[in-house]
Image 1: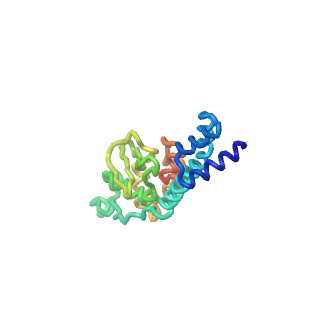
Image 2: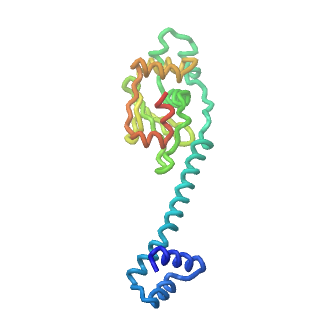
Image 3: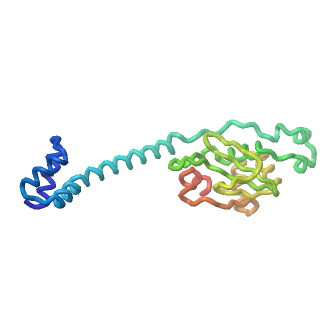
Length: 212
């Protein structure tokens, strides 16, 4: 009896509930060596392992697709931080120099740029982190279901956005902040420095923002 036929019989034996020990005993009674029997049982079990692995992969793929297609966050409804600024409300001619940038400006601008679409890395659970350097002042935003911005920098940032205070205020003041930022990036006024790999950016939802 050749290997294929023996492997087939081992599979049939397992399908009717025979244990490995019982299958081994019966084959030994027919004169087969234990090493050879173990190799045959391993080959008979290999396809089952592959099927289990494929099923797990399919479940992960479906989960990922569901997360990216159905679990995308909606744009946050945020007030424009300029409207909360007394200098802006008084329409002072030099209000740009008087306005004190706060994390609210960063959250608002990132939200308008589409940052609400960012999310945790589905494999590692690490949140999306964007670092900002605005005229020497540092901010960072953590995106995990919503956008939270803080003063300072973050060592695990995925990318850094370099801009002037005037450009940030102009973007927030613009009717279309996203378009303003895109044009400023094209003109070289605003720069984007990538820290994370492309795979990491893709896993956190940056790809659509970065490509635009």
